[in-house]
Image (cartoon, rainbow, N blue to C red; front, side, top):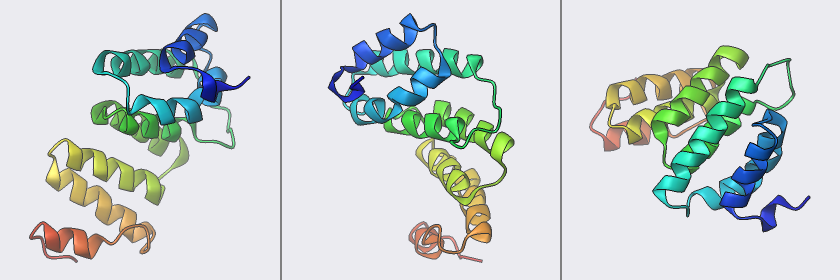
Amino acid sequence: MSYESMTTGQLLSLIRLTRDVPRVVRDCLPALMTKVEESDASLKKEVATVVRRAWDNHYPIGEERDLAFELGLLMVWAGLHEEALFYFNASLALSGAEPATLWNVGMCHLALGRFDEAVARLRRARELDADVIPLDAFLLNKGVRPR
C-alpha cells in the first residue's frame, strides 16, 4: 500500500478503521511525518488523539524499532511538544537513556519555555555522547556558562 499518496485524513481513517493498531500507525509514520507539519491545528489534534489510542494498544515486546521515540518525533513535527514529551519519556522508560531521546526531550522543554529543564536534558545527552549536540555554543548563546 502506498501511504505517501494518501492525505493525512485518509491515513487517520485507515488507522481508525484498523481500530488503532500500533503496527498500522508505525507503517503510516513516514507518510504522516511528511504531511502533519502542513496540516491545520484541528487535524494535528486528531493525529495526536489517534496516535494516543494506538499507543494505548501497544504492548512492547522488544521490537527493533522504538515506536515511542518515533511517535515523539511525529508530535514534534506536528508542533505538539507536550505530547512529544509523553512519547519521548515513554521511550526513555522502555529503552533507557539514549542521547537522541534526551536531546529531543531537551528541545521540547525549550520549545515550551522550560529553559532549566532543557539545559538539564541537553547536558545529560552530552554526557552520554559528546558529539550529540554543540551544547557549548547553545548555552553561550543563551548566556549560560557551559560545564
